[in-house]
Image (cartoon, rainbow, N blue to C red; front, side, top):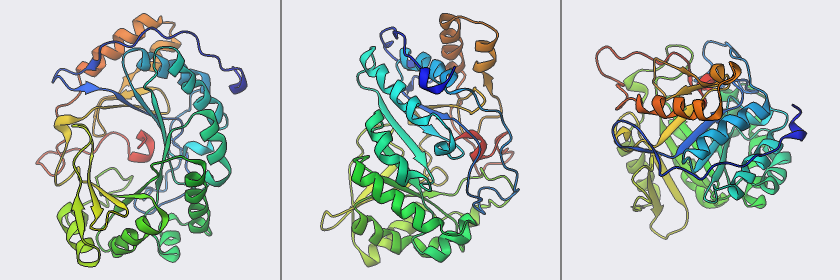
Length: 345
């Protein structure tokens, strides 16, 4: 089916909630629509492997997303790889937005991108119904940024994309920076200033063992406490209250109330106990945790001809198997069966 011909059939009223065996309410679906990327970030694609998994047709992603929404999912985030590489993404956002009129009125639609193509797509995505965007951006110094992405001119393209997204109203606009000691941790103070100057929420993320190679070690992780202390020496911070129990970031503002910093600390201050997420890979596998060793082939069942009711039952049983937590840094820890770019952020 061509992207332009996507249509939304009625979605049954949302269930009271999709819960795992630990009682956690699962309301956040992350959908990778490609594992291709136009960047070659050195900490992510250390193995230089490129795309590895097939992509579904846009209308097939839509059908699977509808199933999750019918089970009570209230937030859909499109990810990759780089999702803006997919033709039909604006049509997909438009069709997901129509689910709001089919029983999913609270549905929040977000997108994570490296920002390189965002300048030309921010306006159309907003018009299609996208609520918010998060841009992955690992330096505010152009030379450092391009050393990371290994793409000439990437910093100027991303900065233009950030400003276009803000102008289009894709807010709050979040900037995600993965920190690695000795690699880009000299950018922390610059990002604090960037948050204020560009009116964006900058979120620092502790580096997790999700790269293609074997770069990760505990010594490379820049912990939350150090980030707060370093920013505080330049611009005093005040911690903000959490908006809900499943929020992943610890939030701070500056003492004058201008700007916001978030810190996501899955390594040193894991938040698994309140996890609300489930993921769908670009080839249609459900992953119940970033660090899962098992994948659940939802798309395979759909291709085999299972009905929507059968697929919903499979989703419910799969969510019941969601892991209690990850085991980063513990004896016997195993990296996940895919790297981050092939899972979807």
